[in-house]
Image 1 (tube, chains in turn cyan, blue):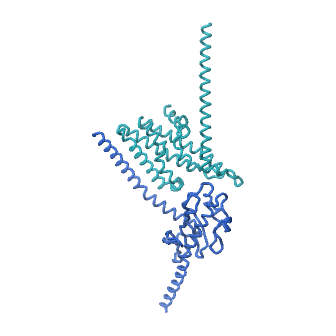
Image 2 (cartoon, rainbow over the protein chains, first blue to last red):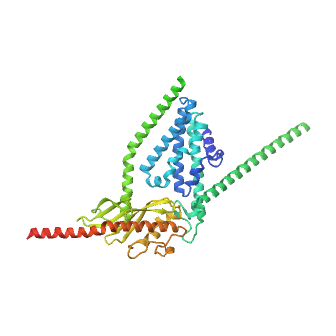
Image 3 (spheres, rainbow over the protein chains, first blue to last red):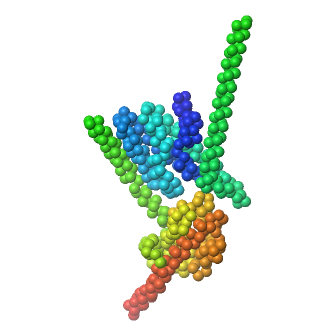
Length: 221
Length: 210
């Protein structure tokens, strides 16, 4: 239950991109195709889990004043490992992600979780936090990339969806399309959360009134 | 003071461990990385040279671009009897929408294009990257400097440009033209000399037989 809650926390309640508003650079830049987005998402997931684990394990060893350089060294090490592994075993993916793999070093999701969570919590908690946040990032960037790829290129995972007669909405695949789509996703996320909040309040209110009425009827009776 | 020293020592320990881990990963990924780099070039050659067989050998050479001091890689595909089957060149242009485009171009011995394959580029996904599609690439097959103007139709040339990616199409034309010019200036005379060489060898053999 606790684990599920942690995963849900990363994927929805404090989704790194849509709620914490972190890591916009890779989200906007690498969401032109779903394939790249998934590759990017899982690379970041790996780095996030690895750095969370190590930083959490080192949290008693790390001097307060030296924590930033140590975080950066740990994160950069994991990013370089991902870079080398992708280069060696997933060459085409490495080629299309290009400079955005080394740039995971400065992905604020990774650094943010190291500073805000892993340096203060146990290894197990940090592991699940990393997985949850990584999945949240992967899902968000994948949804964004799906929308952009379908609209802007008429394909999904490189498969043509609409045939030759479809003329793609080219702007969706260009940088402005990334901003617009992400903006709409943020708006949608906020709308859903506001609605849920309103419903929860309405329910609480109703329950309160019910208990009031109950009390009143008990008093009357 | 003692705290400061401890901080430095701890940072040093973390650095040493990180370096050791990276050295280990680098060690076992080094070979696959080199392999995939090599196979990328080899695959590109196989794509641009049609009808290549396993008996053929590939000769690697570095030639200089025409009107340019830059060096580019060129690969000569040789028949088993060491005559030339095809030439390929890794040509480039800096006119791409997102900067440089590198592409492999293959030509037969009469310097007509047998295939092109973009290798490195940063064109707009979904627009400029359509240059990797067969519909665009196939228009260059069998074309040479004599029967094709490597300019977009908009500029009075023969290239059917990609919709909404005229700049990329122009850049591809530029790369191809430069590549063909370079190949011709480097190999056209040489292939003549190769021919005359083989004639000389033939006559030498016949001379010996006499």
